[in-house]
Length: 345
Image 1 (cartoon, rainbow, N blue to C red):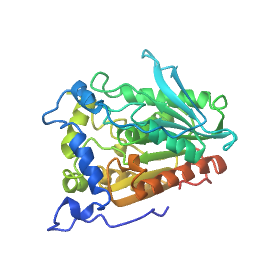
Image 2: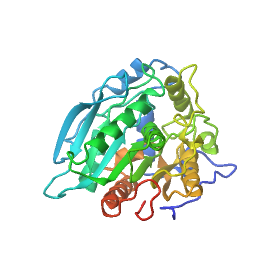
Image 3: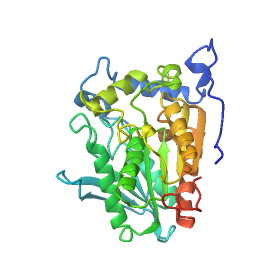
């Protein structure tokens, strides 16, 4: 599969610094987010304190309108509590069913963020794609460490598959999606689905995913400071998620280390000025090498988290529109776990 917006990510020797590679339109937003964000792993080491900082009151705008929204609990993994989800239904007059169904896992380093933090993004994708979205409020670290969140994501995927007709969905157009740590959970839930014989999934959509606990790539070094998300933040996130005894090399923790054969087609979004850039690209190339169709949607001048800025950044609007198209395509050209046909992007 060809790449979308391919561009060189070379970091030439003697680079004059962060501002030279980040799109000038994105720089004010990256700096503002960095100023607001907790100093994770530095002056802020407690997850509760980090959450309190992010919960500080801020200006709000009316959320994008969708057909309807429903909060509910779905069965959790064996021996675990139910998993809260928020279901977003598209406008039935504009998008008559059946429609794709997307199980979405939010980012936040497995520690931060929740259904509300990603509400606007999910609403926007629901409006643009006409898909039903099931946003997953998985258990967070450090209170519940790996693999609790993975099993919650998989439980939500199983519930969505079992209730897809009730949700107004097309059984052949089930999608998993997530951004950042949510991309990790989306990918890991597919490994469980393959291991456990289902459910069948038509597409995986991973937005600047975190896929490798090794944290040792060129983009960690070149983009580790100056672009909002830092290498220090990511180190702290992994410490919270895995704990002192967690196995970061386990495929469910680091899907990049997994056997990727037989997984669904992928659409992988990466930002050029992101420490996670290289692992997203590596996952795309490993999928291709494993016989799995994949599209790499690359944005060299963007930073981690830019998708949430669709109101001000054209690149974010373009990505959202493209994601809507690829999600919609699963209804028209459904493809499940290595079957022929379909369209990954």
